[in-house]
Structures are given as structure tokens and as C-alpha cells.
Image (tube, rainbow, N blue to C red):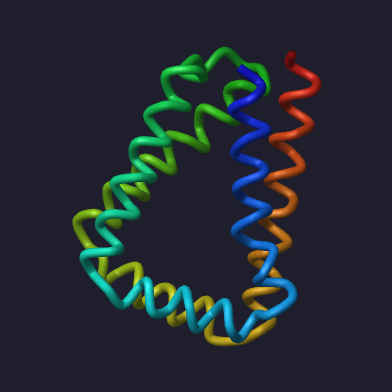
Length: 126
């Protein structure tokens, strides 16, 4: 099941790589996505599907590294449900966090650390 972790890490890096090189353009594109409520709901449905797939594989809370992955995916599922029901809330949060180039780079670094953790967890576990 390590291929799921590698696949997610690749998707995270592929999505957030433009944020480090072109932060203003990335903010503008992401802002136009967040303004469109229908598109936001479709994205939250896709996120729910991905969260359910990962929760089928990593569902145990057994006190190992898998527990951290299971908790992250449970939180992702909750986030997707909130985004489905209240898309305007996420647009307001987007405006707050992505208002500057600095925040975009900080969030990119957090995603980079998470992607590296997923790759490491896939190599250590399997």
C-alpha cells in the first residue's frame, strides 16, 4: 500500500511546486477556483473520495506511524465535509492566508514537509 503514499506525495509536490516559483500567479489561480462555489463543491467531493480510499487502507489507530496517517485522513475528511457545506468559509480563510507571498511560501514548505514524511513513511513501513 506504499504506492498510495508515494502517489499522494507526488500529487502534493506537483500541485504546490508552482507556488514556490510563481506565488502571485498561483494565488490568483487558486483564488479564482475558490470563488466558484460549484467548483469548490466538486473539489471537496474529490477530496472526500480520496480520504475514503486512504481510510480504507489506513483505518487503524494502533499507536504506530499509521495512526498519524489515519488521523490526518480523518481530519481531511472533516475538512472536505465542511468545504462541501460551507464553501464561503473556505474562501474567507483563503483570503486571510494567501494574502501575501510569504504565507504562500510557508504553506508550500509545510506541504513539502508533509510530502517528505509520506515518502519516508512509505519506505519505513513497507
